[in-house]
Length: 120
Image (tube, rainbow, N blue to C red; front, side, top):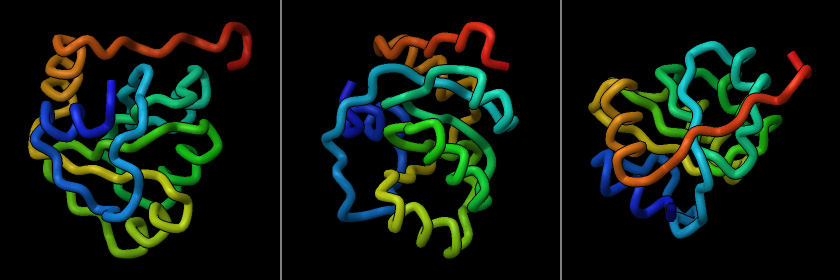
């Protein structure tokens, strides 16, 4: 699924203009526990979270995610937006809850990522 489609489905705003919004997202993972993110193969995936701190983006960078979607209308601080720009990670925001964002994206065909067997 293209990132542009995810933006339309979740009615997201884009916090990082100028970053490729046509990139391919192959799966998704939702969590507010960044240690859980590292237990799954989220490579080229969408990280759906309610966290807005820069540490969340450091985890996203380590996990090689394609983009981050912040839920529940949380507004990331300028420090987080600046880091997303520097890392080249598209940062999106939506008013919907995590549950609703997951349901909308699953219904549209985006599938969950897989667990990294034995790596946690």
